Length: 160
Image (cartoon, rainbow, N blue to C red; front, side):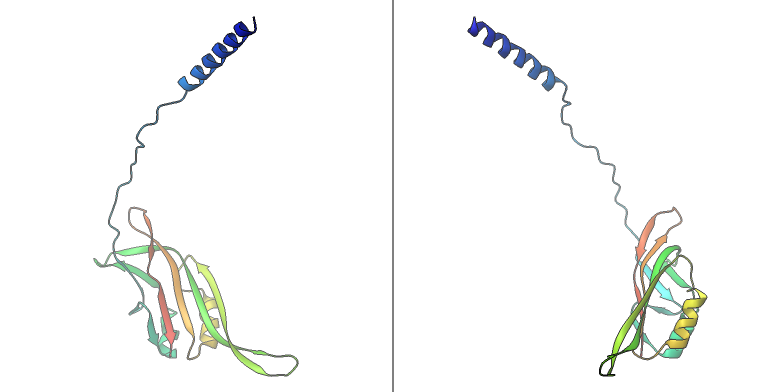
């Protein structure tokens, strides 16, 4: 009788295993629908300046009032969705015990959705800009006529 019980248990186990195996779908080749498109070569410009460039204080003050523009090599203009601007300025810190003043760099950055920069940013930079400071436009996201989003190159103005 115990042998008969073992055979029944074994048969039940095989039946359950076979039923479970039958429920699994057969692995197939995954379907991919990626279409490779060639992205245009974009250029970020502020006035007549593009790429990283050294500028005078007066020219930098003029450039920050102008809109940031993104174009491709066919002169198509792209709509700016968002970008970040970083102003690296010279500052000082004072040791409270010794009174010694040490020069440092201070960084102020913000995300923008419109161009040119906001009035408060233009005012702050205009009042404080000195030689050796930088204005850096980065993480520039643009949209083409079909609504496709892409990154544009960074632009750095180094004040000399």
